[in-house]
Image (cartoon, rainbow, N blue to C red; front, side):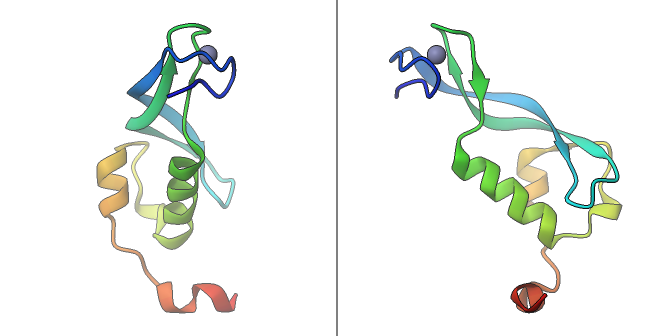
Length: 90
Ligand SMILES: [Zn+2]
């Protein structure tokens, strides 16, 4: 896999913690153990777009008021979504 920043082939899958602002902008949470890509060449560590989209979607579809300050990525994705059927009618 190639690094999205320097195109080196020394990028590999990793896990890291990311701070994420909630969609309503009220606060940020820390998502730990998030799938990421780490590049040994330039040192960048980043989330792939697919992961970013998954987190963004999930935060829009769950009750974020119940979220603690820190959560594991896996646990975040397991939170049941609500009002899913109405989502696209906003
Ligand atoms: Zn790189």
